[in-house]
Length: 350
Ligand SMILES: NC(=O)c1ccc[n+]([C@@H]2O[C@H](COP(=O)([O-])OP(=O)(O)OC[C@H]3O[C@@H](n4cnc5c(N)ncnc54)[C@H](O)[C@@H]3O)[C@@H](O)[C@H]2O)c1
Image 1 (cartoon, rainbow, N blue to C red):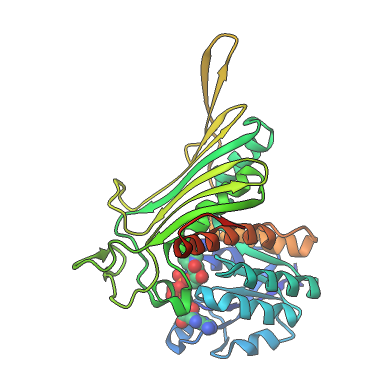
Image 2: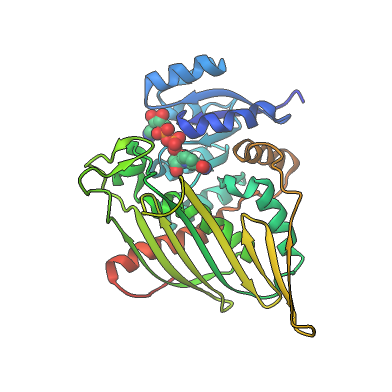
């Protein structure tokens, strides 16, 4: 394809590098420019990927008429202002998770998207694994009946990202709750068919991070300046009567080498377990139980690459956003409710 989408990346750190294989493989896209506040990071990235157009001024990329897509890979608090500016300049936007740290910021992004008539997609890469795609397709056949309860968790043992963009409120807004809670919650709502959340009770706290000697396997001692939560738990009610219990932590004393990410769905027709890809049903006539396991669950390619490929395909072929901002608004409304419940000490109506 000659008229490939021209991609400009803002924030060329860790996650941007996982997008590169997708942009390189896509028949519809090519990376032409990058921006970062760190000159050193920008120089190293430009040399590694042979991208000549690099600048520390993000606005230069946003204003560049030759760029079609802005891929936002900065810390959380810069997502909304950059996306709104990019959409305002007529660009399509792929934006890392969380789409923005507050529901109001996401509403502003949706308004900017609608005014521009461009694509806005959240980079929820967990939706693009083989197992997630297979389970979503299976659940969409109705095999679970009415899903009335879910249990989801994403728990890490001594595995907090210790970079400033994750542990300082002025860059991240929140900690584990919105950093990794956003992954399992997005996946859970997607599997449930995105019912509308109406109430949440939750806690978002720091219990271990500031104990003497507390550490992360990804960065040594937890920096004392960390001022976001490491742990969150919540109970959520939805408009269709369904409920969800959610648990998230970066540092829990939990029996897992690094990360334990699981989801149980319970419906009138059956239950399911992610990521095992198992489905549990009963025949009430014979009083028998049946377990089935999905077997074709291999990834097409690494999910961060797959999301970029599907984004570019959707833009070029005029398809809907593979991860609509409205669904990220539901996710962030719940997570924001957890923070408000921690402060208020009770149930928050959403
Ligand atoms: N989908 C995933 O699995 C996943 C994993 C990690 C991070 N993320 C998300 O990606 C984003 C970035 O995380 P990361 O791990 O790449 O962090 P990182 O610290 O490795 O990289 C962030 C980069 O952004 C740059 N930056 C900071 N402020 C900027 C600004 N205002 N303008 C331009 N550049 C700026 C930094 O200099 C750095 O190079 C976060 O929102 C995070 O939640 C997603």
